Picture 1 (spheres, rainbow, N blue to C red):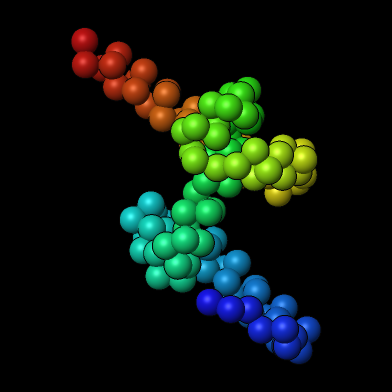
Picture 2: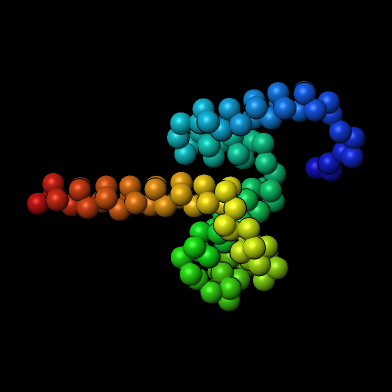
Length: 117
């Protein structure tokens, strides 16, 4: 999809943006998130988002550029771009959410294993 160079009214854009942000806040499970994202993003856009988040996550886990390049099939420039911005508020929020989910999954497995004994 091509992006228009024409801008919309800033007030209208703010209202529409708020609606989209609220949409993401209201998604309650992975299945709904997948449905929504596959509907509003093209396959290429979705792949790009997934790769960008994965790059940030793997950089935070100290994976090498070479490892990331080979596993995600991305360029050094893509990795470098995220590396430059990984300390930004937005990327730090992304990593906090991912790490919280990862921590919860680990503890869920530990607790389940205790009760299986």
